[in-house]
Length: 228
Image 1 (cartoon, one colour):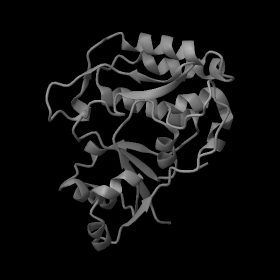
Image 2 (image 1 turned 120 degrees about the vertical axis):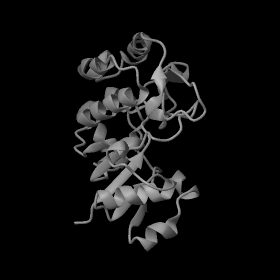
Image 3 (image 1 turned 180 degrees about the horizontal axis):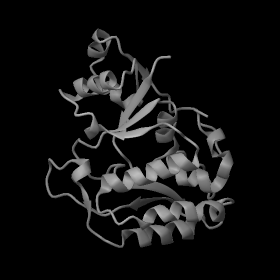
Image 4 (image 1 turned 45 degrees about the vertical axis):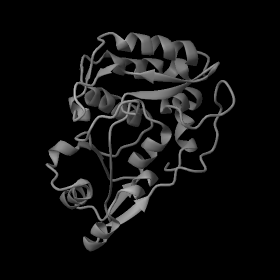
């Protein structure tokens, strides 16, 4: 059986598409050795509120334009308290909020000040709730070499993968010929056509954090994802 891997930067409480790409992989690599970008998904995500979507943002300090994601640190020690209050205020009426609140809120107890470590805790915790068993590793364990595309190929080789699974936006920069030369297939995940679930505060919004799906659908959450 051919092994498939996916490689993505860590995001804060990511949307359901992020977990679909993990579920569809045999190994998932968190690649936080790249530049941290402001106003991106690395340290924030969207939730539903009675007045529309709202950003939930981890306050971080960017001290250099060359700062890597794994080097990025939180600068407000009690940031999690605001996030907990905001989630409580906007999801307390969700059908499965009380059932899953404690398991998710416990993750906020981390004392880590590093964004990458915080993100990984949530990614692994949400995978556990969704019963996604894919092993998750840090790219630094692989000591990847080369330029952007060469590092992806290097990861595939070191993990004995014959297929690289990627989000559609990467088509703009991946050198497909290099993959072909190494006999590694590229599979593009399709994020279109997700079914709607019972979500608070219409109209429906797909882009929000997976916590929205879990709080509203509980154990049935995976049935609203593509890779079940």
